[in-house]
Length: 92
Image 1: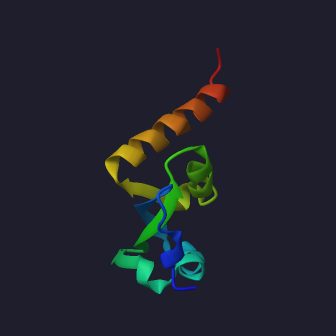
Image 2: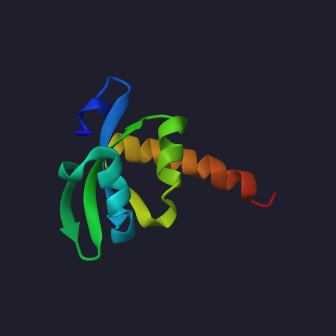
Image 3: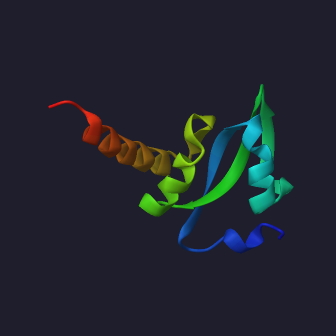
């Protein structure tokens, strides 16, 4: 897999900061060329997701070991999605 087949109209290549423990998962799925930098104990990677619930749930699988950095519009949409989830658990 060369990592190029994920570039479709529905998927947005986002930039994520990942814990080093996730590096191999990203490489396995999309190729080493999608690891684009190192930041301390973290890596910066390109990762394609759909800018909707389906894509956000992929990032949620990484838990606190992943932060969506950019594009800002997708980051804001993801944050809104997270706030809806938090809202379910808020005491009324």
